[in-house]
Length: 312
Image (cartoon, rainbow, N blue to C red; front, side):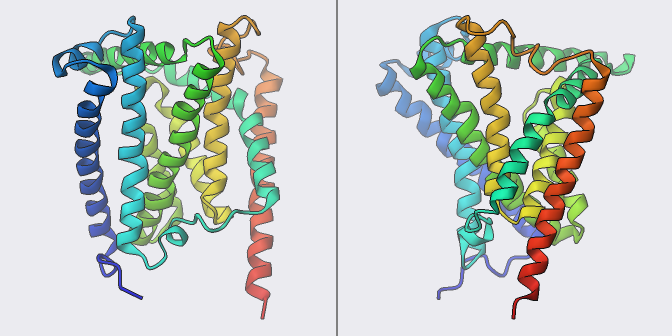
C-alpha cells in the first residue's frame, strides 16, 4: 500500500497544514463559486458583489444560500477529507466514519439533544446579558453589529413558506453543517489536538471553544461552546463520528422546523420562545436528565469497549 504523502508529519505541523488547507480551499471554492454564480444567476461580477448585501431581495437570498452551500463544502467538508487522505492509510477509518456506533448511542444522543433544550436556552439567555468593560466599548459595538447582521441573515434564510424551501434549509442549515463541522472539528482537529497535547479533555474543550468562536456570533458563543464540548464527548465515548453528526443535525433541524411551522401558522411558538421557560423545576430537570443521559451514554460506551478488549 502506498504511504500517504504526509503520513510522517507530526501533530502540530499537521494542525498548521490543516489551517493552510482550509484557507486555500476557502479561496478556491469562494472564487469558483462567484465565477459559477454569474452564468447560473445571469448576473455580472459587480451585480454579484452588490446583491450579497441586500437581504430584502429574494434573488439575493437565493444567491446567498448558494454561496453558503459552496462555503460549507469548501471549508468544512473538503479540507478534512483531503487531510485524512494525506495523513492516513485508511482515511475514512482515520475520521471514525467506518464505525456506525451502537443503536443505544443513537437513541441516547437523541434523548440528550431533546432534554438539553431548556438548559441550552438558559445558556443563550445568560450569554445575551454579556457586557464588556467600558474600555472595550468599541469592540462591544462591533460585536453587537456583527450579531445583528448574522441574525438578520439567518431570519432571511428561514423565511420560507414552501416544502421545497424548507427542504433546502434542512440541507443547508442542518445536513451539510452537521457533516462538515463534525468532520473538521471532531473528526480531524479534536484528534490532532489530542495527539499534540496528549490530553483528550483539553483537546475536546479547545475544539469546542474553536467551534463556538468559528460562528462569529459572540452573544451566542457560550451555548455553542457547550454544544461543541458535548459533541466532542459523544464522539470520544462512542468512537463514531456519525453520533455527533446525528446530534448536530437534530439540533439544527429542530430550529429549522420550528421556524418553518411558526412562519406558516402551524404553531404559535417562535424560534426564540422554543424551549425557553421561567419554570425553575423544568430548567433543573433539563440539566439533571441530560446529565443522567450522558452518564448512560458514557457507561454504555465503556461496556462496549470492555467487551471488545476482552475478546480473544
